[in-house]
Amino acid sequence: MDFLHIKNHIMRRIFLLLFGLFITFSITAQSKKLKAIDELLFQEKYPQAIEQLKRLIQKGDGTAMVNYRLGRAYLILQNPCEAIIYLEKAKQLDSLSIPIMQALSNGYLSSGMYPNAQKTLEWCRKLDTTDLQTNLLLAKAYTSQRMYKKSFQVYNQLCESDTLNSYYHRQKGIIAEKMNYIQVAFNEFVKAYNLNPKDILTLTKLTSLLNQMGMYEVAIKYCNQGLDIYPENSILLRKKATMLINLRWFENALSILEKLRQKDQCNNKSLKQLALCYMHEKEYNKALSALDPSSPSFENDPMVNLYLGIIHLKLNNTGEALKFLQKAQKVGTPGYLGSIYLYKAKTYGQTREFAKAIDAYKEHWKLDDSDPIILYEIATTLEELGKHKKEAMSYYIQFINQYQGKNKRRVEYSKERIMRIKEKIHFEK
Image 1 (cartoon, rainbow, N blue to C red):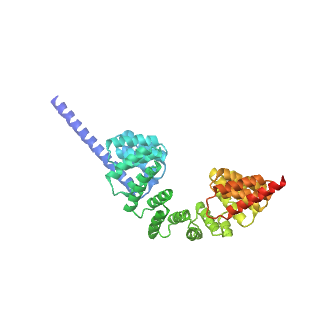
Image 2: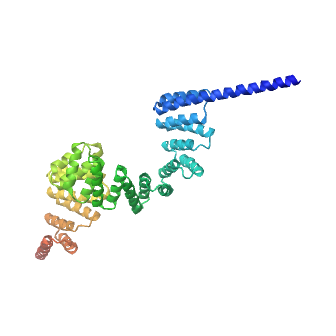
């Protein structure tokens, strides 16, 4: 019995030793395979790495890290749906791994599954509130769901943890702007810019905000500082041209826009600005060449059709002018309708269709009663019709009462016409 007991004990020891050697050999073999796969991933040979990782899974070696690597590879290849499948398996195998959770949340974000990403990242944050990657992804998840207050709080925490990080300040500024905290956004963009003057995105955000604030000259200063570093940057050049136009420095803007057009760097907005500059410089044929009415992006653009109407009116092409103004009216928004009616009235005046001109002037006045000269135009056009003396006199009187301009020539003419109309009415009795 003693012999058998000793024999069995020895056999168990041998079995355990062999099993241990087998496990050690298996782990070493898998480690070598993973090292080779990691080398493929490092060399960006993702299809080959994916193929080998899937072989490991088929052989029953689908550990958390194998699935994690496979999910990460699919994320890099911008295939988040496949990535999520393997990253969720990795999560099942190791539910406490923050890197796995972060990769999974990245997959959720890329797939538009924002609540899933939020839930996953909030769990990660409970484990480590200071993890930068978790906080950045969580802020992104909040922003994607327009939960700006929560996103702002995360970026604020990041800024407090690293006051010299320009990216954090820029992102905080972007969220502040979305929340309409304009001054906060401005302060954060300035901080971000001072920390990294070479960051084009910060510079464009800052100049756009300054444009919104009406601080055009300050925006030009920042554009010029950016152009000192990037002299040919088309984004900064377009921004500068916009500020110059806002300041009505059309000639300066024109030189920038012409250079951009020569380099084929004008977008649709820039082409409209170019046409506007030409119009102010009275170069109407050049303005016409800047706008292609057959372009799909311009066909239903109320501003483009309005510009084309004005240009053709200035070139005495009244038929074409009316065609584009009618089209502008069909596709126009309230912000443009006042100007459309004004130029329709002027075009009808040129074609001596006075009744239509009066109707258009009156429609313009309903939409925009800021310029009393329109009352004067209605009065003089009514006189052209010849049978509306009292109505014309009424508009002359309204014009005199409302006009505050320095040029009194129209006022004196209006007073004279009122006297003449009164005389005619008297003698017609």
